[in-house]
Image 1 (tube, rainbow, N blue to C red):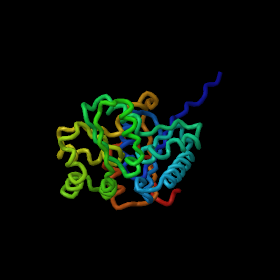
Image 2 (cartoon, helix red, strand yellow):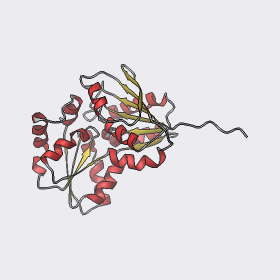
Image 3 (cartoon, rainbow, N blue to C red):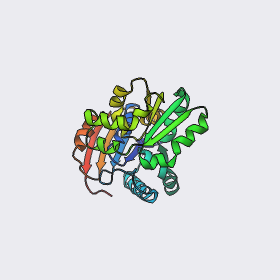
Image 4 (spheres, one colour):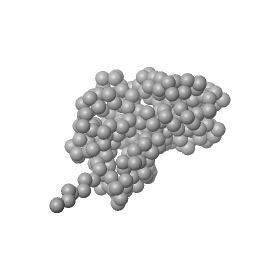
Length: 263
């Protein structure tokens, strides 16, 4: 009997820009023998200030682009798209396994936070109340604060993750929570790149980002042996794109890096 050819798992990952590379990084750490296709929509970043309709439209376009590669799994590596477009994506592509970054992070925070949580994210993510409502459901005893932090994504996209300007912006947003919270939930996949600076200012806080919990959730389906292959696509070349790509560790061989009008 002739054996069937081995099928390599193909995983598509998309984000509004460079932040989703933090998700891709964590996914590659827990996987082997997987082909990853990453799309960063750098021409239209940030999604977090767009209307709900536009966020859904952009997310569907990103998914259609990744489908060209025959992906089996789609990862929404953007909190804004996770909050606003997950249901639309599942309805449009019922044959795909689709994972978002919000649920795994909420599950972790609901059991690790001691008494009070601060949530930061884009205006669209915070306005959706998705983190707040899910945390209140899972752990009603928690005191929860949230606020939009719209300046943080542009900082990261400009390659600014440390230094005086970053500290001043972080203090502007977070200083009032200094003694109010014990856990900070980073509700945007750009924000892990600021985690080192946040820790410098608030060393007593526990910090949870959505990339690591998602990677642990997907780990059982991502191991086939051998090296990962990674293909990176971006819709526009930004000033610090290549610097950020090579700064964020990706476990596997980068087979392609393409920048252009892809959508």
